[in-house]
Length: 148
Image (tube, rainbow, N blue to C red; front, side, top):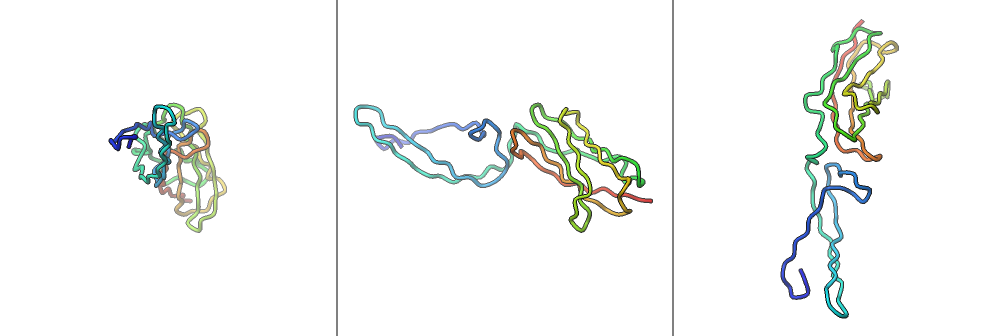
């Protein structure tokens, strides 16, 4: 609202104070309005909102692992659609929750490579994240299997 009580509008580009698109989640914004004129007042309001998915980042839809299942000792490659200015990282976990592998795609090639030479046969979870400026923009988990 302005000093007359009329409703005013503002735009937000979906980015945080570092210029990085925010991830899905609940947020609170502090809205500050400075009234014009001599002795103009300042109105401060807090408003909550929810970001469902940042449209500009892209996601991991269509990501897949090859080979799946993989023979022990063969690398598992995860293919995904890269997004400009976003690096991808992945962590592989056993079903017990132990971290058993990590991969980064700093070159934005669209591939994450995981080694399996020290893994037992079984099912594993790969948690993938797209990152920009240290912030996570989107995530996805896929299942992979290792066989003997």
